[in-house]
Length: 268
Ligand SMILES: [Zn+2]
Image (cartoon, rainbow, N blue to C red):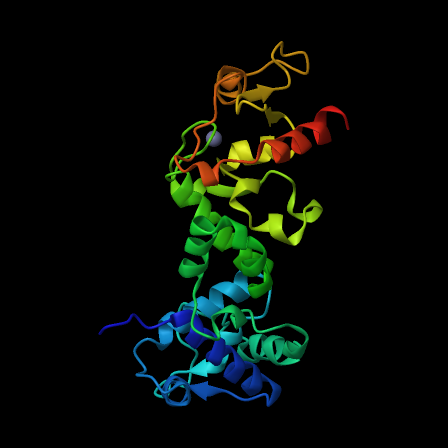
């Protein structure tokens, strides 16, 4: 194999097929879906996994339940919210949803790119963030790409405390997503890689960052309440310490953005 198959591109095609099957209130077998996609049935589960994850993460009905095992006549295990006592319920849930009102979430992959490539583009060409934003319409996927780029830029550890369990590391927007323009929404210079705790504390303004990248905690004297030892470790003890920053100067958080965040909380 010279080139790895692009499962996200296949998910784009499978999404089109499955939403059509849903309009017709029908089902399809793994084998038939593979034939329509012009691939071997083996990777079908990977493709369905991508679609199923998307449905679950976006509170959509589990579209992949429409794909049945030819031998058992049942949906594949692991992909469904199938209830053997009430099998029709989840099918109706899928059929009754108007799939036409949402865009194909894998549209970005139609011409052959994937999330990895887009994340690399954010890292290598930060100025192209608006183009990537235009290409990826679904916010959940934008967030995944942004996080992937930040994980690499910050070498998989929280910019404030160094916590490095990947599952607990999040992509934080300095100027909040809802308040910044298209170019900033995926701009690595408008991002910080933070652990879940520091992400929340930053988003709520308990912690801000100064121009020289030093951490500023708002309640050094514990006037707003007594801190536990662990509270102090995560807040007071970090005050005036410098952020763990990316090595590449093009990935540094933009000082102007940090100032806007600070003003948002300090000046109201
Ligand atoms: Zn942290």
